Image (cartoon, rainbow, N blue to C red; front, side, top):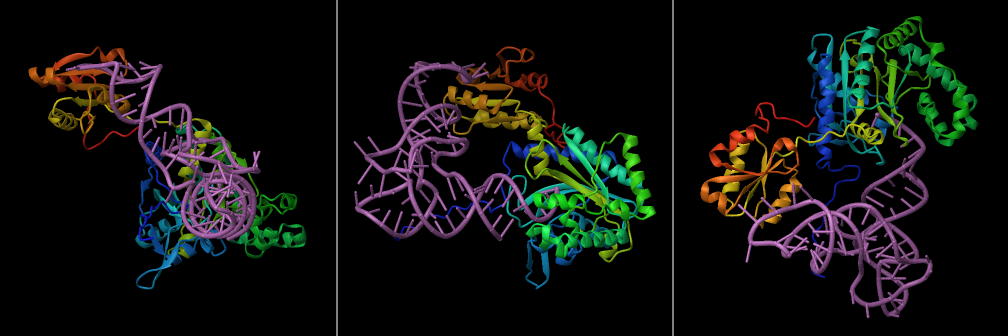
Length: 436
RNA sequence: GUGGCCGUAGCUCAGCCCGGUUAGAGCGCCAGGUUGUGGUCCUGGAUGUCGGGGGUUCGAGUCCCCUCGGUCACCCCA
């Protein structure tokens, strides 16, 4: 009765630990994305993880992301704050606060929180990266933004990605269209699924996204946005499409694509991974949000951006069997069967010289230390035993069977670095190598 | 938030339907075969709050309830 068991904690629901080697793979993915961004002159912005609740409410009062899924709470000073459910709102807030020169082209990579029921490819804590470009009304910017995402997917080897695209028109167009959809759906209200009838009340456009069989037929006959676009919106959209054609980015027009966030205007798009058979096959999405900066209290400023889901991209990569980067690999594993002092000193010396090295702590037999060396994947085992110690030498044993690494041999301690430098690369300490 | 399925060693799983001696396998791990040499092979070894709590029973991994977690779908979205 008095015996108490120590409670064992585990990660909260929907949150998980990313362990090696998966952690390195994610880092490599992000590095790829950053490279694409920088090639187009986008630079990183790092907004806070927490904002005033009001910032996120601008995302849309009618969206689930804001109404049901936000991690919001009252701070110690009684202000209402929230963990970000997405990045765009914070970035636009930052834009309004700092008023940078236009155009402002930024990228971000970070963690978001949404209190949803976890599912494959959907977690309560999840990473996204994306870009935002503010201050330009040119359709060619839409093309640039979309093309950047498209190039990124190609660069990591993803092939089965479909770009879905649509235009929701200007604010007024969208309003008129929404009303038309509402009227139409009301006329068929009794045929809609129960859930969609509820959705219809607060956000008619979202009904168009329903996956329920009974809704499908009705949705098919719903009014099309294209018929509600102003001449200007239609021209903008046409120019986006012709731009994509010109640079060879293929797309599928989807007149039902409405997307979940209220702030979208005109161009909207989504990337679907065809290799994913789960319902979570949207690996990214974005669009224009021309009214958002103004809603945030800033000047009327056009904007466009997208966000990509790291977890889902990786899932898609798994499904296609692509993007399996290998780590750089350990160069030397030091084995010391005497006192351990040589292992201590040599690993330090090698690392300082830019050669990656590891050893085993706690000694152990030659055999067991060799097993450790093998498991480490090291290119060379560097052996120090009684014999070597006596004559101030080490034994260098190639472990990977590469002909270029030569045969096992004895090397003088003073010649060690010179010998290894013939095989192992130097590390620039200001630019540590990453896995590629 | 709603519903289906699942939860047994570090991992993948068998055992559960038809309760009954020390709960198993493969992989991994450790050690030895090889008193200085890994990856193959052989031999041996360690490891389980059977997710947690309660109940039924002489007896529960096995049956019942609750709960937590996972998973899939819906909702929604990346």
